[in-house]
Amino acid sequence: MRCFKHQDKEAVGSCRACSKGLCSDCASDLGYGLACKGKHENLVETYNALIEKNAEVYDAVPKNLWITPIFFAFMGLVFAVDGFIARGITDFSFIIGIGFIVFAIIIYIKNKQLFSKTKPIKGKD
Image (cartoon, rainbow, N blue to C red; front, top):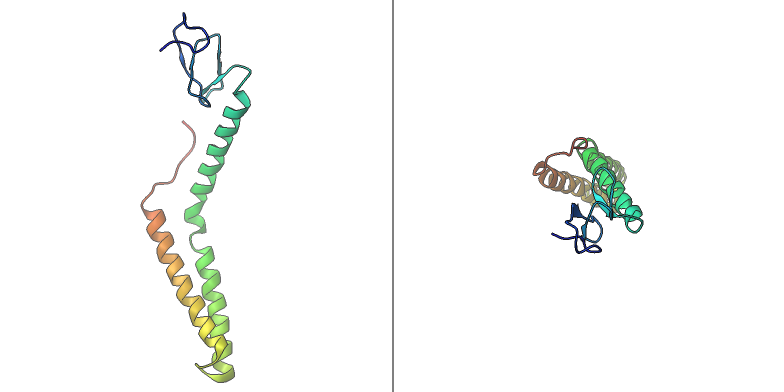
């Protein structure tokens, strides 16, 4: 592959932003990828920051798997007990409470299915 700007030079890699071939004079090595010197350095820095932040968020998922289902189950229990005490199983609060509990179970099952298929990302290479 040849450098996009200097056709007479061999490319050492390609820009992470635009994928054009870069020679050693045109390339800016950012440690995790090459960028067009003076043109795409900020953009490639932004790409890397986004990827790192996404990896951090994704790694936190197993810890947060229970938070939403527990919240909905708790709220469902509050509504169901209040409705049952007030007027029995025909009370609107009781029905809403049962709906919250069912929703919590569905969320938990879907979260487990989604995140049990993938492995967490650990650290940088």
